[in-house]
Image (cartoon, rainbow, N blue to C red; front, side, top):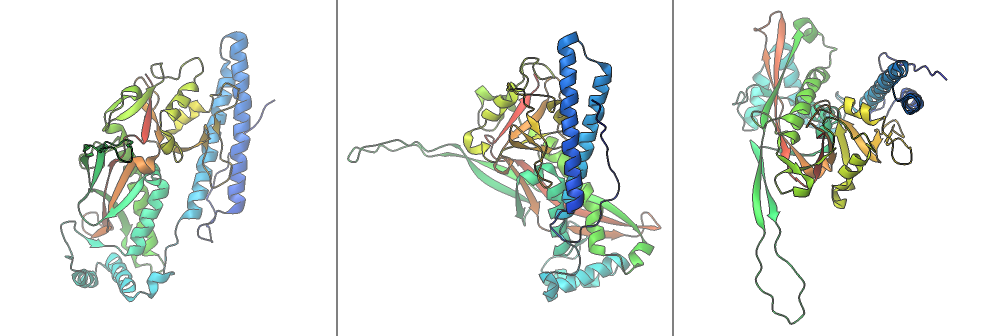
Length: 424
């Protein structure tokens, strides 16, 4: 039986109701994803049967499986895009902040600065707030509505940010004390003596906020157009650039001028885990899953995590590793990867959500290609309050450049909460 996978493309209709998915498009995308996965399972079963019968793979079946796998990725991407558009916060003049005179004045002054370069209004407002108009960061603070919109969208676009704990700070960094050795405790009878016990051992973790920038460009004609929503334009221009940089830094960042990524920390075998290092489970095969019962190592990874962390745990991997996992079955012959049950849900693996992070490495010899854990307890993202914009009409005439900066940091805060799968 031959199944043809139809992939659909084109612009997504504008969502008129904030926070809702376009029902028709979301339903169609979900149906397309499920249909593709059924075809994928049927073709993969045919491939496995052919291997058992001929001890070799059929080239045509492999090519068909690759096409269906690509259709699965396309359907999943389309569903994610529709869900994101449905959850984007509205930008504009509606909402309670418009009734606030100070917020309204800030928005009007910022709009005038972006369109015409007039900064007197912003200088006056920042002097009122006891902050310099062009301090060490340079530029001027954007209105709160834009900052909230950018941060909200980043949470949808940046995979680790969406899973992690996010703290907003006003200084240059965030420090936190953690316990590396608990206080000694025990049972004692009512009248028995109670000897003095050792106190807990504490260690300090530091998360400095590093500068992240984007350079948006516009023509003066665009800026002169009164109908253009400046708030929406600024948010749209910087959100993708910020999300891509954050997504990479939160996974592989070395902590120098950027956040420290979870894969930059020292790792040890889970049986030898110690505080300050991340534990890993080995697949037993260099750069691959084991040939016999390949799904078993994923179960080992899940149960390497303590029960208290598993309740809110998720898998993180890139799309190529996820593609390989789609072919795996459990001992009962059931596929361990499952498509989403609803349009606003994600795919699942062994019953846990799967988050796709392109910064995660491919499955290669010694690579840490899959992370599993409670990232809300395990990873911390710190945002310094304030998003700044500096207008530059001179460097790239006839374009006007907008040097936009925000400060963000990150790192592992609980080394027990995240486990890694090592292809070794």
